[in-house]
Length: 136
Image (cartoon, rainbow, N blue to C red; front, side, top):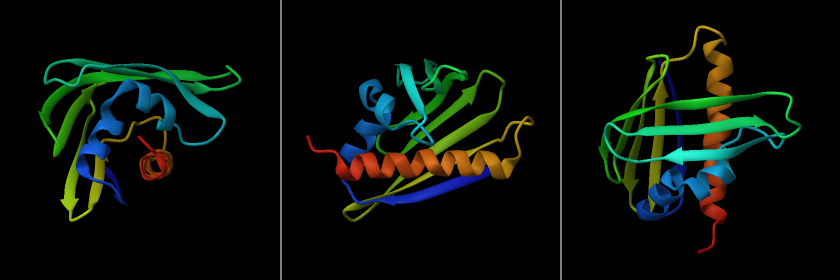
C-alpha cells in the first residue's frame, strides 16, 4: 500500500466540498501544469460510480480513473474500489482549524510504487494549495 498525507489549513466542510464536487475536482486534480481533468462524474454515495478523465493538455495522452464507492462517512472517510479491483481510501481528520488528509491506495503493477506515490503526492499538494487559496 502507498500512503500520502498533508495538513490543510481550512475547515472540514470546505475541504470535503472541494474534494468531492466535480466543478472543483476538475480544477485541482492534476500532478503538473501540463495535465488537466476535463471530465468528472462523481456520485458520492456508497455503491455509486465515479470517473475522472485525466490527460495531457496537448492531447497526447489520457486515461480514466474510475471505480465504485464502497463506504462513505461524511467529513471522515471515502473508500473505493477501482475497475481493476485495487482498493483505496481517503481519511479526513479534524485537527482544530486544520484537516489532516491521508490517501492510501494499492499501486498498479505497471508503474513503480515510488512513482505512483510522487504522482499522488503532487495531486494532494495541488489540492491543498487549491483549498487554502479558494475564496468562496
